Length: 405
Image (tube, rainbow, N blue to C red):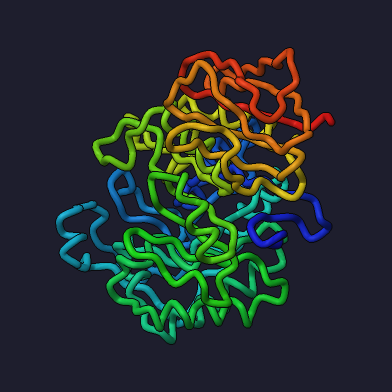
């Protein structure tokens, strides 16, 4: 995978790549039964990228121990999750590992899962570090970090579906500085002969994405319409890998509706960016998709599959923000390629008609898209500059215009 035309992605042979991603942080640490179920779910899902961690995860709903660890385990401690203690920086006692040796069986298994994703046509966005840790992997010293990073890159770089994410929520990893993250980026860049894509994911504070080793932005923010702002600032592709999750858990980031998830995908798309999915529905065995995989329970997935079909027929050069195409006091996001293709999205607004400002002397075939009902209604009359376009007057509508003259 490569950055193409500054703001988009394409395979090395030039085939366009329109990202519809999801997150399953610890799916590769769940044992073969659940992992195979996750792969079966992915086989029928629209996702073409999956964010996943090398290290296991310590968090609510994640108190089961993995069968394998990246390093030989010398002693075992508590598996209990405690948010208050975690935020205070409490280090669980009892766990110890031989950080001088890797566990080849763990990495053979992890490689197998990356290969499984490749067989499904899914990019594996490999997260090298994260803060949610009870084992000591987030607090290794710099020498151990560097040896680990070189080892992972040496083992996985040959897989063509790999992306590198230096960290999930790097800015709450208290044991590492910005200089540490710069060093990790440089190691990956220097050791990867194939120069896979590289990013770093924030919780609160942005990393400086203008640095040369960053290929694209991996953002945690709830409003993907801001994609345009960060495209213009950094001149790189913008991916909202976390815009909150469809679900019903207590955390505010994990209980948005399916309608809101779909809205954020379309708003980000119409703003020139890319958006990622996640799902966090309560489960009697704590099998939440965002962490462990399994099966999907929400309603957004078929709508995201519909969006992917729309994107498959969009310009190969990608969708770039376009100004003043659909008039309103504040404007609606619109992206495409000038003089050929325009996609405007109205979100939870419900206009019954809008005036369209297309280039003078050009005519377009219009389609009204109901992004929730997954319906496309062609307009009978071609659209020209100044046309008043009739709309359904309900939320979640988009207007697609393709040039015919």
